[in-house]
Amino acid sequence: MKNDKKLTDMLYWAALAGLIFWFAYSKGWILANFVSVDAQTAVVMIESDDNVTLLDVRTLPEYKEGHLEGATLIPLQQLDSRIDTLTEKKNTKILVYCESGNRSVAASRILEKHGFTPVNVKGGIQALKSAGAEIIRQ
Picture 1 (spheres, one colour):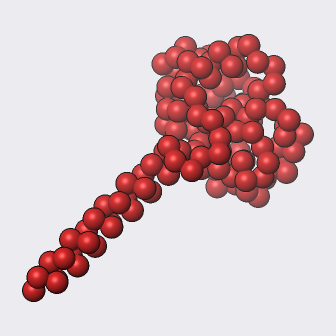
Picture 2: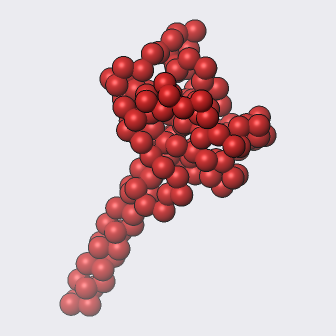
């Protein structure tokens, strides 16, 4: 009986540690070989750095609701298969955003794996709107 309790406790703590690890990984807080910036820093980069490519990894309907001017749309689900369309941008910083900052972390990992220099925007387009970024509708 005592051993069953110990085993249950160990499994509980292992599961909790795994959940915490997964959460931190999905947010890009750990094991991230790319930079994440807040929306205000992203706006400054957009306005002042000519060496920045904007990549929107949301869906087409989300993109049509509003996006950054000049952004390239490649939904996250298509990024691996369409990575070649970004080859000419390999020497630029790729500012990656989504709706709230989760898909852009996954996209940044894919880009980094293919040799790009992704810069993840924490908080996504919602944070960019709050930071005063110019959003256009299509």
